Image 1 (cartoon, rainbow, N blue to C red):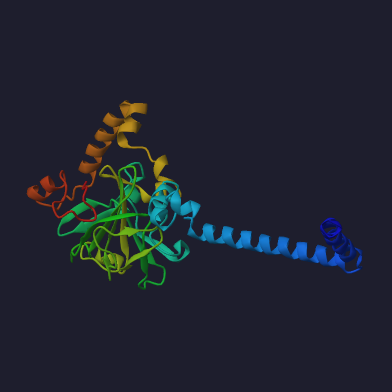
Image 2 (cartoon, one colour):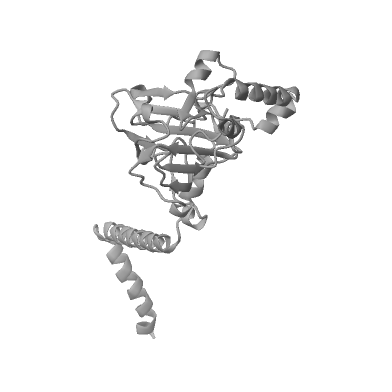
Length: 284
């Protein structure tokens, strides 16, 4: 009976003897710390593994490489209209846009004479100051809508933009784009070349900006945003009388630039658009 009662007492005494040892408590602390540290490391590794398997937040939201193209289109609204050259400081204007409000001398200088016909220049003829070849770049980001080989015009590329705007590049060579290509502003699309229509300009690019098929003066819109351009209808809404005044001025200009040496049939051609869709499609 006494032996049975002494058994639990002997176990407690063994534990007490162990705890009374100097190394007992430090050993217990070290072991506990090791277990806690091991548990923390295991939990951290488990969390990292699950994070690697979880899709990235940007990818889950559809924000990534697949969304880069729409972002460019949105930013294109904010682009500033630039000259179609890499360095405007090295460029020179060979022939200006025909501005009906300019003085007589400037209007005369903006006329193009070809094959016994007189035409108003509906863009800018831009050349390098040294007369050499140069890269022609996209004035704005957009989509290529036309690529045309034409010896009279010196080849042609058209790029569509927002707000009913297109940019037209003629008298070019070594074209690097195709119809349907999306190009960014400043991207090289061709090199300056020559055209039969304006041989006196030498190596150049004929550049036009049109909105709803109405030619705009590039010099007047360089540095502007697409969203700031007014359509002809919007301008007419603000000033209804301007439409009739513009038509009257256009008619008087047509009479003023007719070449007296031309035949009657040639005179009739001056009152309509050139069927060849040349760089000066709107004639005087």
